[in-house]
Image 1: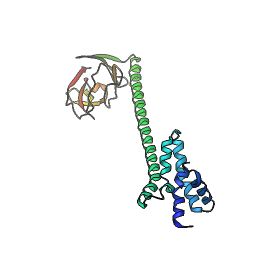
Image 2: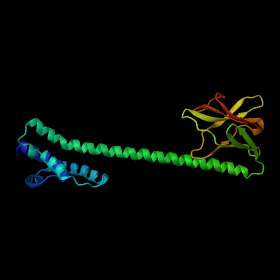
Image 3: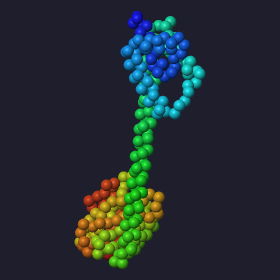
Image 4: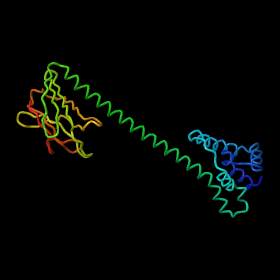
Length: 248
């Protein structure tokens, strides 16, 4: 068999795998596949790719115009064209398959991003539930002391349970902050030194914000608690606007 004739059969394999081959070309290629091991092996690879595309994307039959345009790119339709043009049609099938694979990768990446966003939202909601339950559990203890917070456009309470050495801030209408800022709670020692009690942000879609406080020292070591606005990540000592201060 002449080398050029065998090359034409190989060029028709991608169209055959996609079901775009008809007439004499279809019959000639099927007859050739009966005797050519290399073409049968290459056809298996094309079918594996085309089957993956068919299962990943919803079925959509090509229009008559597109089918005619694809058939016009087959080697048999290009025999009277110049050699450079024949090579361009040869690369069209591979370019189309590569574009489809790139589209699949893009769809998978988009799905992964959506999944991560949903997971982050679920984690945020779970944290809000835990902090709210913590404040409610403190109110159930008879030893818990509630100290009101009085500040401009802000109300709330500081819950203290000295027996269990825990505290909680419950604040209503806490203003939103920009992305490069955070709220930071401070426990105040008798000499005025501040000890960080953690950073927090207002709870999304809630009119109140709860901040649990777990001091490493005994609460009797402190005379008050306050909140300031600090750069994202917090500060070693207060540097920003003071939101409120409550004395124990």
